[in-house]
Image 1 (cartoon, rainbow, N blue to C red):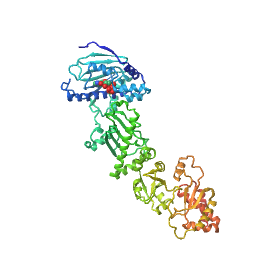
Image 2 (tube, rainbow, N blue to C red):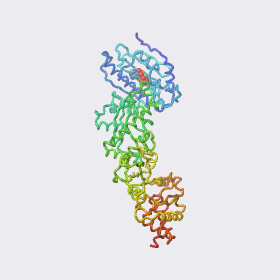
Image 3 (cartoon, rainbow, N blue to C red):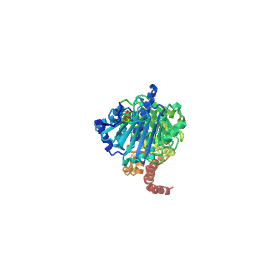
Image 4 (spheres, helix red, strand yellow):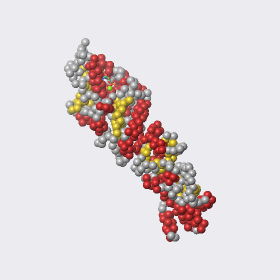
Length: 613
Ligand code: ADP
Ligand code: MG
């Protein structure tokens, strides 16, 4: 049977509906039609490769398995030709005229479920072959099936309800799709335009893609290869290409998983944290692929926010059969990918910390801030993230850090708290009045130097069942130390603290004798539970409300200290001078705590005290 005159067919009702949406929606990412047609070409080549394994008689058997794209800016056409399995007459009718196929079917289903027709939806579903009609006045599909007995055909449509099929001699095996572009889409007949689009979406398609005779895709989809067979240089080359990077990757994680989802992932940590350098906030940069074809370059929910420094590729290949790459807007699926990949990456960091501590330390210096963000905000991964944090402590050397797990391993007796102090640097914390009580009791204190640390500790709250506790908090209870010789008696202390409270009046909430102090005469503790000294400093720096509320502190005195003993004597013998000393002691304590807002009154008083020397 031969058909030499064009035969006219109506599109199935659903296809007409689909075409109507595709051709009439004002769609910004029209370029995805290239991705869709190249993917179909790649699928057809893949099918041919399989067919070749079992079939001896293949039409045009000498052809290379490749995809040729040609543009003609005079004629305003773009042609995408593959040497794949091609389509018979019946297949042209079945595959291009009815809604038998995955992507488009899912698209209509989503619309039926009330999804709005927007750019995003079309972009994700792709709507396959029909997306050509976003840019085409007319589409012609020239094809010859791999089956030798079949003639060639040309299928033609302007996308308005019907199409024709006619026999056509001289066709090569596979499909050649010629698109006559709409006038306002003539840019797609530019070589440079198509080159960019192919590089964006189809860079890793397995078959050679030639654009106007020049090979476009030269980098392999490394993530699908066995990691034992990939060289370091190949990874670096891939990273530079895929992440548009100029540096060398600092760390990489290449893994695949079969359950609960099939995942092939290749993730990179760059050399530098550009956010730290003052560049703008990073955007998600791990791209989502399905069978080597890019679905989304910057998927928002694929990874948690705090992993925004990662680059690379996640390819989920064997998705459950009813889910094609066009349904990746499926939130639940992305959430599951997110969970698997995040856990895997955390495990990877934990192993790095153990096996290559120096490399981890370097990584942490650069990217630790993201782990802190996660520890404070990502409840699901808080414990694993807290485990990855590192701090200097009263027991480490300057510049060396400890993990919380190591801190816990050094805890003695029935200690239940992990202590930390926040301060601008090691020297400031060590010379402050808060540390000595802990040192005297052999209690380790973590040193936190970064502005976010207090927030992180407050949010992380505990680690390994031990409470994270600010060592300068008024509530901290420490064990008794043996009373040294020569301290003021309990009665004298009572008298002096009462006098101090009356003398300092509104500036203090409470005055008491301290068991924390060893070398310092006094110590100021924040009376406001909800605002630590450090937080107050930050608020002040940001000029937020709260900084202006009058400051009231708890003053603790050291009954063993010479200055306090002397003050006890002068407070009756020379009350005026004692008052000056008391005020100066309070200011000294506030300076140590970083809480003295205005030093002018203090300087005037100091001068007065100096007069009497
Ligand atoms: P999908 O690719 O999701 O199946 P498409 O709308 O992209 O949906 O394509 C519809 C069908 O048309 C494909 O399933 C395939 O059978 C057929 N087809 C499209 N392009 C080609 C091609 N280049 N070669 C052979 N068959 C093709
Ligand atoms: Mg397709």
